[in-house]
Amino acid sequence: MRQARLLPLSLIVAAALGLPLQPTPAAAQKHSESIESAASDTVIQREGAADDEVTLEFEVEDWVETKTATVRIAADLAVESGRFGAARQDLVGTLQGLGTGAEWRIVDFGKMGDDAGFERWRLVAEARVPEASLADLAGKTKEATKPGRALTVASIDYSPTMAEREAVVDRLRARIYGRVAREIVALNSAFGNRTFRIRMIDFTPNYRPQPQMMGMVRSESAGAAKMADAGGGLAGAEKARLSARVILAAVASGG
Image 1: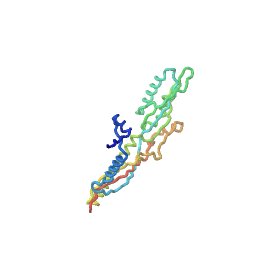
Image 2: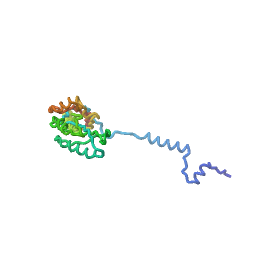
Image 3: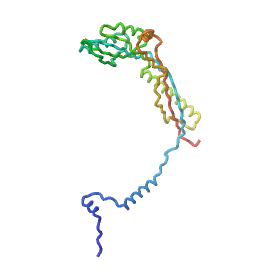
């Protein structure tokens, strides 16, 4: 009589519970060998002909100029308790009436302490003021000073604005595009059996203009007030640079 073959207990339990059966080591090895065999048959091939490439590097620069300045006016207020809101609105109205044509905003304020029922506050207002309005700004702030409110020009910063910087960067980028276009024409003329095209233009991360001998920030003092009163010729400028790495490519041919 033929002897019955007993199954391992783990397989009997797995079958009873409906669990998936794990492959035996021999089956797993066979499956692994089939995957390696399939992978060894995979061949990566290039589609199409390789390109001829020309790599160029460009760097252009220009001046960023401005005819305005960021002005900060400090105001020291002494107001009755609970009257700070009204005093602040009155200050903004006074600044708008200085005749600069600028829009003033309160950028900082803090309470300094109480004295005999009064609250003392220090506020700082900021605006971008045209150069033509800087000459008599110190005098106008002095005239706007009154009991309980003292105004002074805290600083004048002649650095160009972000919009002025970006406008110059746009012009520099257009100059690089023009030079690239001329290079393509020259290459196609020199190699008549090629048709070059732009593969890549990579503007370096430091393309944004960096201040060059600029950043003239003058704190308010007797000398600074005289400088502001002097008026003309104070427009600021800084150097902007833009560099790019360009790859031009053409389909290679036998000629």
